[in-house]
Length: 303
Figure 1 (cartoon, rainbow, N blue to C red):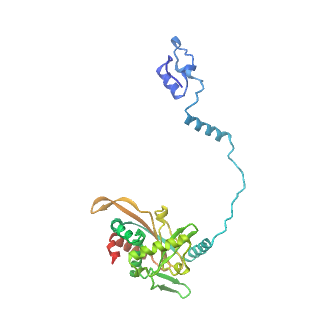
Figure 2: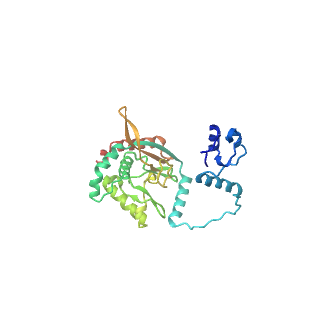
Figure 3: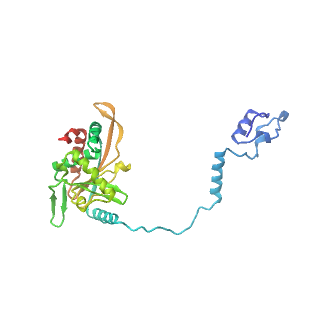
């Protein structure tokens, strides 16, 4: 489209450019053949740019093509594997039996971030992959010993609450075949580095389908790291007959207040689901506050 080398009023040139009108195709009615605004009336616009042409064509196609495809539903029937069958059964049991509630808390884990950075190289030199999950599971194990009223199961038939002596922490692992939960036995008796080794070993076995039955039973509490798949918060479902599960969200770098000064820090969101029949909301709150204390003072996890 051209508006040059033709006599036209300034306003006519602007309007011609806006309407994509080629002035070379017009005969002006003004003095000496000058093109006026009125000469633009009833003139079909020229073809727009390539990009606009594509959009225009798509619009015209949408207007002329019927999009109401009245076809019956179709599907592929995929048989459930053993893991999926077990998951269905366990989740239905949990949702049916438990009076679940979820408490959430953001925790500044900057101190844990710094300690991990300090220990990471020496751990790797000794074949240990030190993840944040190792800090979290070690902290959870210590808290469960401090709060035996969270490390419990409901004995409905006998109207009793079972306070468990063992601290066995299940670790939810996302595998191609479905969710698997191997168990770190006696987590309260292990160092954080031993926990890190077990996390890596059990997760590898889970993904390779090599877990034994003994490695998947007798958990008393579960930790689910859904932050690994981009979630900040969730309402994790209790792995019955356990009574609580801790969900770990995605860590983000965020401005935080440190002694009235704003500094960059690392915030990790946590979601804890409990069975309200035997664990009160106050207990969940106290658990998360204890977790915050450990992650703000990670040296305590080395003791």
